[in-house]
Length: 143
Image (cartoon, rainbow, N blue to C red; front, side):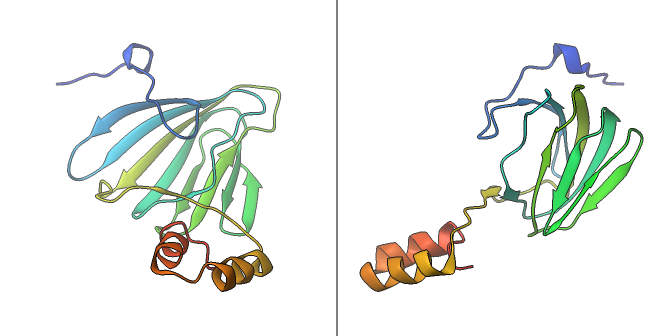
């Protein structure tokens, strides 16, 4: 039997810059413990696999696609793959969330960069070369 204590797991350096700890990581799934201090938020991102969030403590706001909802303790929220999502803590209390990704993602999670359509059109018109088109595709700049 293997027991992993959150308090004894190191904090991962992620683009989100919050307390993120990898608790479980094998070919079938990944489990991450996230602590959000009041006012902290994850960056908007897209995960290439299905994800669920289980709220351990606090009342974070879960944003999936164009929907958002404050979620209470002992609630599970499903987030389908390839949908922009993030979690924010707009409360005055700490929020702790267990995030499970299944199966384990093979590709990288992509941060979502949102630009207005006018800026995108201008950028493509002014920089219509293979590199700019590739960057637009990689960073989801076509909205």
